[in-house]
Length: 124
View (cartoon, rainbow, N blue to C red):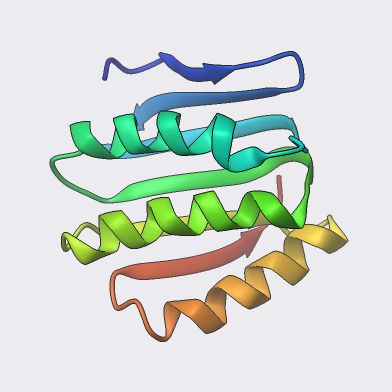
């Protein structure tokens, strides 16, 4: 995966890959509200995960306006697949957005079971 590549572009959601200080970052922007998010997200995230050789991998959700609750499942499967291979994953949520703070709280709970997962809530 080259830096600056879009790994997913739809009418409402874009996920970009970039490299920042030797950290792989997936920047999410738009809205993730697919009727069946696993059909859209799982193939893309699985393909990306197959290319990942090292961490940390950062998923930056601060650019997301909305994510429906059913989209969390394929994202969590992606995170678990990386963590199970010993790859560090860090999730970043927007402190100014209520649903992102709530999702971050849930992900922090999950992080207690996944030793390679960390979560932060930051300003955009």
